[in-house]
Length: 246
Image (cartoon, rainbow, N blue to C red; front, side):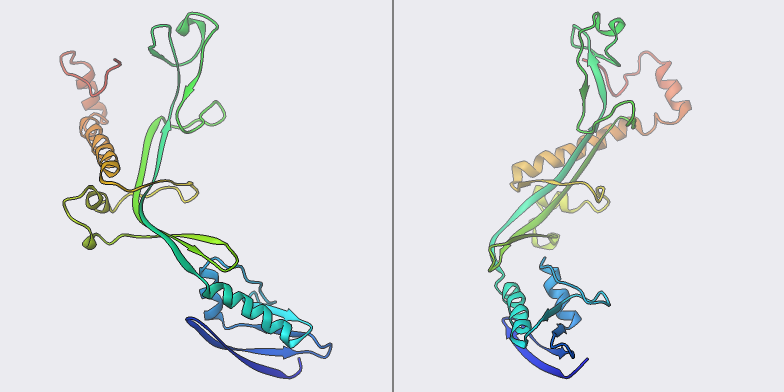
Protein backbone atom coordinates (compact mmCIF):
# COMPACT_ATOMS: atom_id res chain seq x y z
CA UNK A 1 0.00 0.00 0.00
CA UNK A 2 1.34 3.45 -0.92
CA UNK A 3 0.99 6.84 0.69
CA UNK A 4 -1.75 7.74 3.17
CA UNK A 5 -3.86 10.91 3.04
CA UNK A 6 -5.75 12.06 6.14
CA UNK A 7 -9.14 13.61 5.39
CA UNK A 8 -11.26 15.45 8.03
CA UNK A 9 -15.05 15.67 7.74
CA UNK A 10 -17.77 17.32 9.81
CA UNK A 11 -21.51 16.98 9.24
CA UNK A 12 -23.99 17.73 12.00
CA UNK A 13 -23.16 15.57 15.03
CA UNK A 14 -20.48 13.64 13.16
CA UNK A 15 -16.90 14.93 13.17
CA UNK A 16 -14.01 12.59 12.41
CA UNK A 17 -11.02 11.98 10.19
CA UNK A 18 -10.30 9.01 7.96
CA UNK A 19 -7.17 7.84 6.19
CA UNK A 20 -7.19 7.27 2.44
CA UNK A 21 -4.56 4.92 1.02
CA UNK A 22 -3.53 4.69 -2.60
CA UNK A 23 -1.88 1.57 -3.99
CA UNK A 24 0.49 1.07 -6.88
CA UNK A 25 -2.39 0.72 -9.33
CA UNK A 26 -3.83 4.09 -8.35
CA UNK A 27 -6.85 2.79 -6.42
CA UNK A 28 -7.90 4.85 -3.40
CA UNK A 29 -9.41 3.07 -0.40
CA UNK A 30 -10.47 3.93 3.12
CA UNK A 31 -12.30 2.40 6.07
CA UNK A 32 -13.87 4.98 8.36
CA UNK A 33 -13.41 4.67 12.15
CA UNK A 34 -15.32 1.74 13.61
CA UNK A 35 -17.25 3.81 16.17
CA UNK A 36 -18.48 6.11 13.39
CA UNK A 37 -19.42 3.15 11.20
CA UNK A 38 -21.42 1.65 14.07
CA UNK A 39 -23.41 4.86 14.56
CA UNK A 40 -24.24 4.90 10.87
CA UNK A 41 -25.22 1.22 10.83
CA UNK A 42 -27.39 1.70 13.91
CA UNK A 43 -29.38 4.21 11.86
CA UNK A 44 -30.16 1.44 9.36
CA UNK A 45 -27.70 2.58 6.70
CA UNK A 46 -25.88 -0.20 4.86
CA UNK A 47 -22.09 -0.10 4.73
CA UNK A 48 -19.65 -2.26 2.78
CA UNK A 49 -16.94 -4.12 4.70
CA UNK A 50 -13.23 -4.53 4.06
CA UNK A 51 -11.37 -7.85 3.97
CA UNK A 52 -11.25 -7.87 7.78
CA UNK A 53 -15.06 -7.52 7.90
CA UNK A 54 -14.82 -3.98 9.27
CA UNK A 55 -17.76 -1.85 8.07
CA UNK A 56 -17.41 1.51 6.37
CA UNK A 57 -15.10 0.55 3.51
CA UNK A 58 -14.96 2.76 0.40
CA UNK A 59 -12.91 2.53 -2.78
CA UNK A 60 -12.55 4.57 -5.97
CA UNK A 61 -10.02 5.23 -8.71
CA UNK A 62 -9.78 8.88 -7.57
CA UNK A 63 -9.35 10.62 -4.22
CA UNK A 64 -12.37 12.80 -4.95
CA UNK A 65 -14.38 9.67 -5.67
CA UNK A 66 -13.63 8.19 -2.23
CA UNK A 67 -14.38 11.51 -0.54
CA UNK A 68 -17.67 11.80 -2.41
CA UNK A 69 -18.75 8.34 -1.31
CA UNK A 70 -17.93 9.05 2.33
CA UNK A 71 -19.71 12.43 2.16
CA UNK A 72 -22.81 10.83 0.64
CA UNK A 73 -23.11 8.33 3.50
CA UNK A 74 -22.41 10.97 6.16
CA UNK A 75 -24.89 13.38 4.56
CA UNK A 76 -27.52 10.63 4.56
CA UNK A 77 -26.90 9.95 8.25
CA UNK A 78 -26.89 13.64 9.19
CA UNK A 79 -30.12 14.37 7.31
CA UNK A 80 -32.11 12.25 9.76
CA UNK A 81 -35.35 14.10 10.54
CA UNK A 82 -38.05 13.07 13.01
CA UNK A 83 -41.35 13.18 11.14
CA UNK A 84 -43.64 11.23 13.49
CA UNK A 85 -43.72 10.30 17.16
CA UNK A 86 -46.55 8.59 19.01
CA UNK A 87 -47.34 5.96 21.62
CA UNK A 88 -48.39 2.59 20.27
CA UNK A 89 -49.36 -0.81 21.64
CA UNK A 90 -47.34 -3.57 20.03
CA UNK A 91 -49.06 -6.90 20.45
CA UNK A 92 -49.36 -10.51 19.37
CA UNK A 93 -52.41 -12.66 19.97
CA UNK A 94 -52.20 -16.36 19.13
CA UNK A 95 -54.93 -18.97 19.33
CA UNK A 96 -54.08 -22.61 18.70
CA UNK A 97 -57.01 -24.94 18.03
CA UNK A 98 -58.84 -26.82 15.29
CA UNK A 99 -62.44 -28.02 15.34
CA UNK A 100 -65.65 -28.48 13.40
CA UNK A 101 -69.26 -27.70 14.27
CA UNK A 102 -72.31 -29.93 14.25
CA UNK A 103 -75.65 -28.76 12.76
CA UNK A 104 -76.60 -27.19 16.09
CA UNK A 105 -73.39 -25.17 16.22
CA UNK A 106 -71.74 -27.30 18.88
CA UNK A 107 -67.99 -27.86 18.78
CA UNK A 108 -66.84 -31.30 17.62
CA UNK A 109 -63.32 -32.70 17.19
CA UNK A 110 -63.44 -33.37 13.45
CA UNK A 111 -65.65 -33.42 10.39
CA UNK A 112 -66.52 -37.08 10.12
CA UNK A 113 -70.23 -37.94 9.59
CA UNK A 114 -70.54 -39.34 13.10
CA UNK A 115 -69.84 -35.83 14.42
CA UNK A 116 -71.42 -33.51 11.87
CA UNK A 117 -74.12 -35.80 10.50
CA UNK A 118 -73.04 -35.63 6.86
CA UNK A 119 -70.05 -35.31 4.55
CA UNK A 120 -70.52 -31.55 4.46
CA UNK A 121 -68.31 -29.92 7.08
CA UNK A 122 -65.93 -27.03 7.64
CA UNK A 123 -62.72 -26.87 9.61
CA UNK A 124 -62.24 -23.94 11.96
CA UNK A 125 -58.87 -22.94 13.34
CA UNK A 126 -57.12 -20.28 15.34
CA UNK A 127 -54.44 -17.84 14.28
CA UNK A 128 -51.92 -20.69 14.14
CA UNK A 129 -52.27 -23.19 11.30
CA UNK A 130 -52.55 -26.56 13.02
CA UNK A 131 -52.92 -29.76 11.04
CA UNK A 132 -51.79 -33.37 11.11
CA UNK A 133 -48.24 -32.35 10.19
CA UNK A 134 -48.13 -29.43 12.62
CA UNK A 135 -49.55 -30.64 15.90
CA UNK A 136 -49.34 -28.37 18.93
CA UNK A 137 -51.06 -28.03 22.29
CA UNK A 138 -54.30 -26.04 22.09
CA UNK A 139 -53.95 -22.71 23.81
CA UNK A 140 -54.01 -18.95 23.90
CA UNK A 141 -50.99 -16.61 23.91
CA UNK A 142 -50.96 -12.87 24.49
CA UNK A 143 -48.13 -10.37 24.25
CA UNK A 144 -48.51 -6.62 24.54
CA UNK A 145 -45.97 -3.84 25.04
CA UNK A 146 -46.50 -0.07 25.04
CA UNK A 147 -43.78 1.67 23.02
CA UNK A 148 -42.83 5.08 21.72
CA UNK A 149 -42.79 4.87 17.93
CA UNK A 150 -40.58 7.31 16.05
CA UNK A 151 -40.36 7.62 12.28
CA UNK A 152 -37.27 9.25 10.78
CA UNK A 153 -36.79 10.42 7.21
CA UNK A 154 -33.46 10.69 5.42
CA UNK A 155 -32.13 12.71 2.50
CA UNK A 156 -32.66 9.80 0.11
CA UNK A 157 -36.36 9.64 1.05
CA UNK A 158 -35.83 6.47 3.06
CA UNK A 159 -37.86 6.19 6.26
CA UNK A 160 -36.79 4.27 9.35
CA UNK A 161 -39.06 3.28 12.24
CA UNK A 162 -37.67 2.91 15.76
CA UNK A 163 -39.38 1.77 18.95
CA UNK A 164 -38.33 2.80 22.45
CA UNK A 165 -39.41 1.66 25.88
CA UNK A 166 -41.60 3.92 27.99
CA UNK A 167 -40.38 4.71 31.49
CA UNK A 168 -43.22 4.15 33.94
CA UNK A 169 -42.12 7.05 36.15
CA UNK A 170 -43.24 9.36 33.34
CA UNK A 171 -46.77 7.89 33.24
CA UNK A 172 -49.83 8.62 35.38
CA UNK A 173 -50.22 5.66 37.81
CA UNK A 174 -54.00 5.81 37.41
CA UNK A 175 -53.89 4.90 33.71
CA UNK A 176 -54.20 1.58 31.92
CA UNK A 177 -50.91 2.40 30.23
CA UNK A 178 -49.21 2.39 33.63
CA UNK A 179 -50.85 -0.96 34.44
CA UNK A 180 -49.41 -2.53 31.28
CA UNK A 181 -45.98 -1.07 31.99
CA UNK A 182 -46.04 -2.87 35.35
CA UNK A 183 -45.76 -6.28 33.63
CA UNK A 184 -42.15 -7.45 33.68
CA UNK A 185 -42.38 -11.16 32.77
CA UNK A 186 -44.01 -11.08 29.33
CA UNK A 187 -42.17 -11.71 26.07
CA UNK A 188 -42.80 -13.16 22.64
CA UNK A 189 -40.98 -15.34 20.14
CA UNK A 190 -38.23 -13.32 18.47
CA UNK A 191 -39.46 -14.34 15.01
CA UNK A 192 -42.99 -13.08 15.62
CA UNK A 193 -44.08 -10.15 13.48
CA UNK A 194 -45.85 -7.88 15.93
CA UNK A 195 -49.06 -6.04 15.20
CA UNK A 196 -49.61 -2.55 16.53
CA UNK A 197 -52.33 0.00 17.15
CA UNK A 198 -52.05 3.60 18.27
CA UNK A 199 -52.45 3.90 22.02
CA UNK A 200 -55.57 5.22 23.70
CA UNK A 201 -56.70 4.49 27.23
CA UNK A 202 -59.74 2.61 25.92
CA UNK A 203 -57.56 0.39 23.72
CA UNK A 204 -55.15 -0.24 26.57
CA UNK A 205 -58.12 -1.30 28.72
CA UNK A 206 -58.84 -4.16 26.29
CA UNK A 207 -55.39 -5.63 26.97
CA UNK A 208 -55.66 -5.05 30.72
CA UNK A 209 -58.98 -6.92 30.75
CA UNK A 210 -57.53 -9.64 28.50
CA UNK A 211 -54.67 -10.23 30.92
CA UNK A 212 -57.04 -10.27 33.88
CA UNK A 213 -59.19 -12.81 32.02
CA UNK A 214 -56.17 -15.10 31.58
CA UNK A 215 -55.36 -14.64 35.26
CA UNK A 216 -58.92 -15.58 36.22
CA UNK A 217 -58.69 -18.78 34.16
CA UNK A 218 -55.45 -19.59 35.95
CA UNK A 219 -57.11 -19.03 39.33
CA UNK A 220 -59.76 -21.59 38.41
CA UNK A 221 -57.40 -24.14 36.87
CA UNK A 222 -54.18 -23.93 38.83
CA UNK A 223 -55.28 -26.34 41.54
CA UNK A 224 -57.02 -28.68 39.08
CA UNK A 225 -53.87 -29.61 37.20
CA UNK A 226 -52.83 -31.98 39.95
CA UNK A 227 -54.40 -35.41 39.29
CA UNK A 228 -55.81 -35.85 42.80
CA UNK A 229 -57.53 -32.47 42.68
CA UNK A 230 -58.83 -33.04 39.16
CA UNK A 231 -60.35 -36.38 40.18
CA UNK A 232 -62.12 -34.75 43.13
CA UNK A 233 -63.53 -32.02 40.90
CA UNK A 234 -64.66 -34.39 38.16
CA UNK A 235 -66.22 -36.89 40.56
CA UNK A 236 -68.20 -34.18 42.35
CA UNK A 237 -71.15 -33.33 40.05
CA UNK A 238 -72.19 -30.41 42.24
CA UNK A 239 -68.88 -28.59 41.74
CA UNK A 240 -68.91 -26.23 38.76
CA UNK A 241 -65.97 -26.52 36.41
CA UNK A 242 -64.37 -23.33 35.10
CA UNK A 243 -65.71 -23.79 31.59
CA UNK A 244 -68.87 -25.05 29.95
CA UNK A 245 -70.02 -25.20 26.34
CA UNK A 246 -72.83 -22.75 25.90
